[in-house]
Image (tube, rainbow, N blue to C red; front, side, top):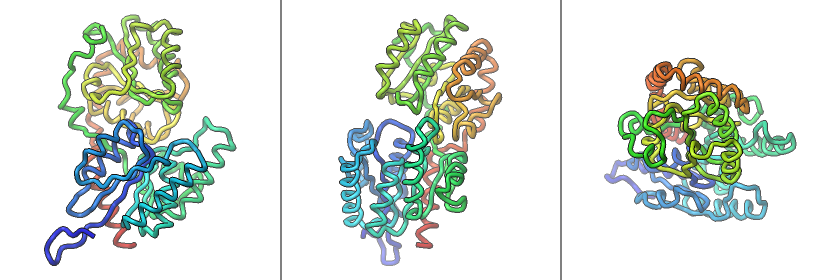
Length: 390
């Protein structure tokens, strides 16, 4: 094992993070930031992931990161591939002999912790970025996934929850006791959103008038984020504020359905579907507010990003979102699926821009709890605590 130098130097501990796929999402970006910024004087760092994510190339460019690809590790439940992934992960851990395996997301969380257990890894940490089971599933699906989580929990040294709502949900579901979990909120690079971005030419490129109200949502186009709800909201807001435009940044399986809905709601020319973008700080500089129509969440990254950019947020009241959006202070909350309520709140903010700016300033004043570098330092402290008792 590599040492940091000097006869009395303590050895560096090996930390291995595991995630299902490095897509362009909050959990994936936070994981990549963590493995890039962990203190190399204290830790040797590795990352294990499935293949095909938009962040794969970025991960490969980190010079001092041991990177392992597991093609069998996929998001969907595929028994044969899952067994192959378990075997592959176990082989990697036996060869690597990490001190800590830290898993993320449901699939990598279950397979990664079992593989770490089989390989004899002493410390096994799992971060909950929202649970794989949710209210939109059938009772049978929820029961099966809850049972898988509960069956894997005894193999877990410590759970990390990105929101208090997720922590309490895990306790209520009988997956872990409150004392087994640590609250550690997902972080964002606050400086980029506070100070580092320019408005750029986005409005001119899209043909949006310089002063037109502009509502934006940043999300993967998948059922969790309910992008079709955002199109419905846009249709209702357009009737209230005829000059408003709308942006949806992201891509995914529902893109075709979103394009059809844009046409059905007569929003062509006013609703701009941007696909995946990496210039989110600059995009936010162009917005009047940020919307989020999620049906379930961990703690969505775009919310603290919007707060740092001094934008009000109108979002659904799910999981960790109300822990960031303070009703009537930094934005508004609506029940998931209640597009009429969300549209009414967005319309009010667009018609009262000064109140929106006041909410944005309040959000910026409250966003320090989401600093991503503080998040990494807290993870380092947690590793040290767990290793001291391993």
